[in-house]
Length: 140
Image (cartoon, rainbow, N blue to C red; front, side, top):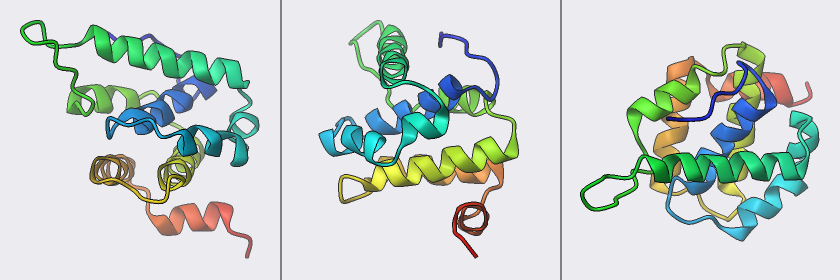
């Protein structure tokens, strides 16, 4: 069971980013450094320590869900993802979450297949396109 965060909160978005950080089974230091370089903490209005607390809590929560038989941790679980996506209902916050997820996942020089699948699923679920993100963040 995931810890509850208020809907549309900085913590709810931070948890989505945490999901991206661990989804390929490797937490690359470039992705962690990118959080600072991309001003993620400021954009979310969440301190670095608070973000790291959300990341650690996410890792604890998914390890608590480990398979009782063999201890397998499912990094990508449709039900968990769907539950986390429902925590962000505001369209502008969803677009922000997608933009940050894209930036963080590509910060290590490549977007892994699990990261790409998760990104596509999130954007499809929320009906957000790359054009929506571009319109929100690219200066006209």
